[in-house]
Length: 305
Ligand SMILES: Cc1ncc(COP(=O)(O)O)c(C=O)c1O
Image 1 (cartoon, protein in one colour):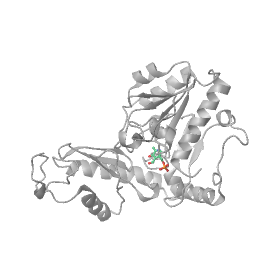
Image 2: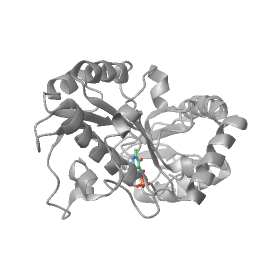
Image 3: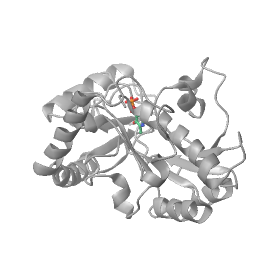
Image 4: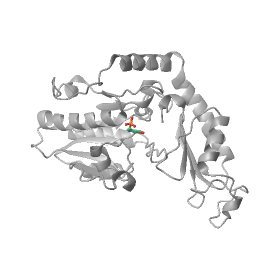
């Protein structure tokens, strides 16, 4: 496929079809559990279960069959899974929400619950995947394997749109010829780029490098964080600097205070300008639109956002 959102859509279709044809869910009753704070793209099914009002506003009506649970809350997930649940869809770390890392053990518990209830565990690794967190896939940090893993972004080496749905034949084979596809879905150039990107990631040690450099960057950012910073968190080279609410949207104060009443004139610059300077000084790209307005996220160029 071309975009990450297309990979997500494909996985949703796959899960529903698997639910009806393999699990035996009654027609039209399939449910998919998703997480509050999710970001899975901008297609209509996906924004329909977004918790970001700006993503949804005036785009309805939306598809039914999605249940939203708090991210990181295994007990809520357990309560939400019922006989008609076909899949749980989650990000191993929520990227657009501001690099939200779930409590340790959350993905392992999700794995157990999905296995016990014959539900597909779908992990959206479009942002976390392919080395960014210091492992090939972020799910490896918890030693779990999803039934369906979605990759995109870095799969195109930072310059070509390509995404993929990874699943075993037992799941994938519910899609038969003619039931799903797109004009450029299997385009040879994209496949060549994806193969080259994966080779470079492994052969040039980029995954280990993300772990090593990321740990250093995280420690250094934590060490220099001023009072305007609420938290610096991350894994590998997926890092966010979260500001206190009082500092957000105004740029850092020249005197380093986090006081809401501080004069805007004392604030040095807009956050995006300062982020850009900070970024270019270190040869890293820091994205412009961030959904979590209080967070600056550090990204590496191959990830395309
Ligand atoms: C976790 C996640 N899923 C899906 C997407 C959508 O990917 P695309 O923009 O390629 O459609 C994104 C994009 O940022 C993402 O971060």
